Amino acid sequence: MRYAGLVERIAGKSATAWSVHYQALARAAAGENVIVLSVGQETSETSPALVVEAGIDSLRRGRHHYTDVQGELALREVIAERHSRTAGQPVGANRVSIFAGAQNALYAVAQCVVEGGDEVIAVEPYYTTYPATFTAGGASLVAVTTSAADGFQLDFDKIAAAATERTRAIVINSPNNPTGAVYARPTLIRLVEFCALRDIWLISDEVYATMVAPELMVSPGGLPGGDKVCITVSSVSKSHRMTGWRIGWVIAPETLTEHLYNLAMCMCYGQPMFTQDAAVVALREADALAGEIRAKLQKRAALLVPELRNLPGVGVFSAGGGMFMVLDISALRVDAAQFAQGFLDQHDVSLLPCHGFGEHSAHLLRISLCEPSGRLSAACDRLRTYIAARGWESVEVIEKKGVRFI
Ligand code: PLP
Image (cartoon, rainbow, N blue to C red; front, top):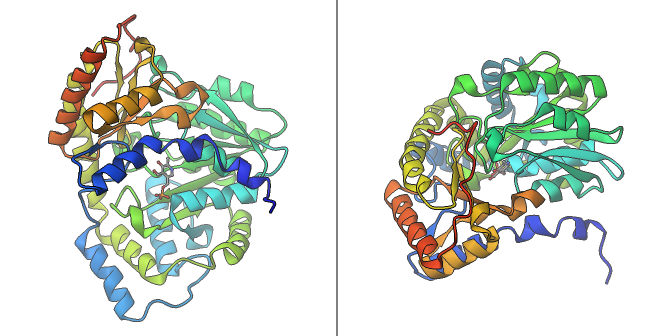
């Protein structure tokens, strides 16, 4: 039997990037004491009790029928109000579309704005699913690299130089997964101006927006000219410990929202009422949780940085946002995937090698800060032992300038 060309485009590194992680999960499920630091999820925590109760109560009230395909009005209203307030971009519920998590929202956006022959610029390292998401419809992904030496900040001139007449969209993610980099306002102002001038969509993936001090978070939709060109994607997955509820959204101009509605009609026909009801309660009554999670993650990063910093040949980057830290092991002259596999096999700790985050990221390892401090410290000890036993030569000290250490 034959398959559509799409199956090739959605396979590849995005799909295989999680190999070490899935091995770790399988071993943990089999009862082994594996420290899983390869996923951005507080696995040992649950969603807030009032959110769980709201979901159950909704089901009991019979809220399990077909829904508004664009999303329940109450949820769209609370998202619109929250975004207007935090991003400084006044939007109404008519511009919000609900999807099954930010991932589904990104995919829906990609289907509506890019196609064969188009180019999408992504800032590398980028979230592993971006290549499949943005090339599924036939567009190509153009990676613009960032470097540890510059704190993984995006370089406007590099992006502008990479843009061609085929560029239809630029996708950014701040705070970034995996680096934690938070993009600066002046750069984003230039980027929005550029997109407006060149008729390019700016897709802003803000799933980690609450994982940085509010005064540092800049949502480009709220910048001058941003309302017309920006598409904001976010979810309650990380901010409210609701990864499995699959509630995400798109905030977009009205016409794109109409197209997204048509796509939702033929793709999912709406999201469940009871998960949306629970998300309303999360956003209305449990928004303080995001601050608590942020404080906890930053405390853990502060604990880890000194422990990891003294490892020979390892650069440690903790840029202050998001759920992760990044290790640069290029000085050890070993591929990160090989390093991570050996570490899991010998020391029962899973780190995520970043080869799925872009061609130029195979020397990076991502460490999730979502596990309790004790387990993070134990993982650091094992990392020290692993590196010492392998006797990798520390050929050079990684340059760390420009990176703000916590
Ligand atoms: N975007 C980024 C940068 C992510 O890290 C993730 C999940 O880890 C997603 C999108 C998907 O989020 P969701 O769970 O809401 O689909």
